[in-house]
Image (cartoon, rainbow, N blue to C red; front, side, top):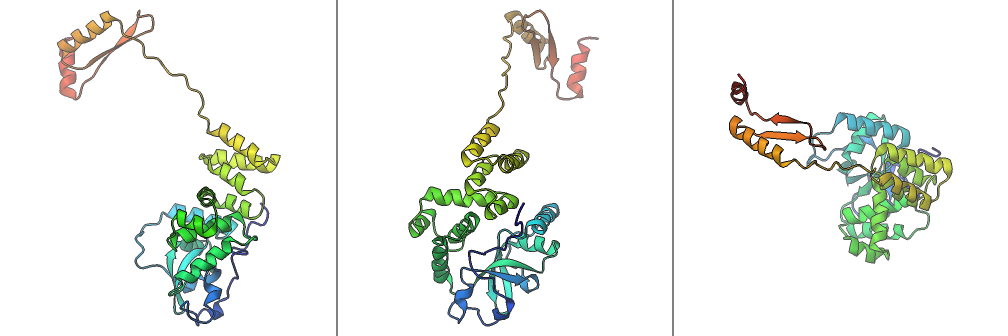
Length: 295
């Protein structure tokens, strides 16, 4: 996959170095506009977990899997931090923070929240959406921030950016893709349309096979959607029609149940010439009771 470690936020804004971090803490401070709406590279040593983080257990295998993905592809989705003096507190993305440490990273891409930056951030993000150099994943991340961090509804967001709600929904769905496929969209190997078709295939192996087929055969979006539809169609299964039990079998079933005082089931063949008797018992005492009738 070409350009696997494409720098995050190339379209969203500058990567700010650490030397300016000490002087900007509030949206009213000089230089705050460089922080608001942009992605910064922040040293892991300067980041503190959120003490009010409700999640206390992080699955070790899942973290190691994420760390391996980060080693290969980098951090696809930046974490969000709150600036407090020279330190940064995690608002969201603690799994990515922990996995980045395991992966041996020294810094991670992050969105920085400043004091009183709500209005400035909304303006910056809405402006970003209008830019022509953003790729589909950057657009989806920006939509997500407007919904989650600013608290806009999809209806509000639709009005603010002049896009249909369905367009916004389909864009954000791309963030459900595996980071490898997100990165393929960012590097131009596949389009957002290909990505949406991949999302519709839930099985991971089938999804990978379809992705490989897109690259190998240079499938169009329409062709990919057709392939995805075939993969989603359940295989035809022959339904077994239960055999109707003949009346004489039903009568024998009832008589045996009355005699043995347990549930009795007689299963007959289609031609009614052979079958089997199933006796249900709940404990050893009932089993002994059944056996006593045959002694």
